[in-house]
Length: 304
Image 1: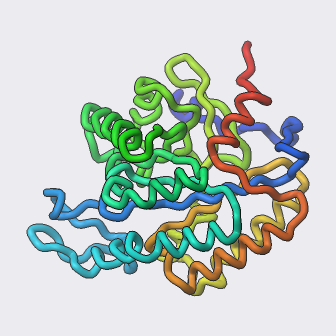
Image 2: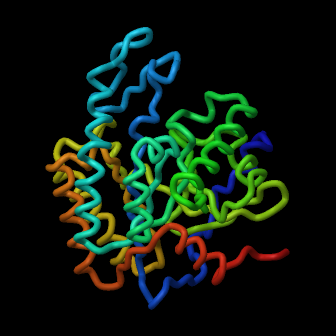
């Protein structure tokens, strides 16, 4: 017998013949470029944490408390000192709208990033008070971190996020806590579809704007992953071209991190993709908040 908890998953979605959707101006594929900025908020003996974060430039963990991991910390520092600004220049040159998925403390430690976001009109995706996995916390701690994050965003950016993407992955309580906190238009933890969809939380519908771990530069560290920036470029170009060829309404989330794609050779791969996307008919870039608002307005949850 299949357990009820298994049956509760939506494994069907829109099915083999999904209903007709549309993007603004008849666009077929909407690309959402997400810049992830976490530097300075990672687990570290400096914060009094019981571990030092990995995921710098090499997989695995280095020295652990009471010692600092100077090697990995330097990779994070590169993201905040140089990498983020290389991405800023690239995005400004391309003239595309972007979504910044930033931990609140990372922006507080480098407020010039928030100033750039505000000056260019890029939207904010909540990504935690710090870059810590919510499933490692008890519910009270996760609730407190969520509240601290929102308060910090308002103080540093002058605005709150309208969507949320948990560090690492959501906990069992995350979606319920987002609804409890209020003020969120959408959840971006799942990577479960090519178009937004609704889930029920606390008896009310909540929009999901799907994220992507596929079109994500974390594959520079994952195995199997990218052996060269050309692999990243080819993945993005081939993915976009196939979505356009299918001719179905779809969104493509492209995720880059300051400490990874902020490196010069890797930034070149992103530049090549943005140039390709700009030349491709029926493709447009949209901020994540605008995607959410469009979907909520044009395709509200059905009332049964």
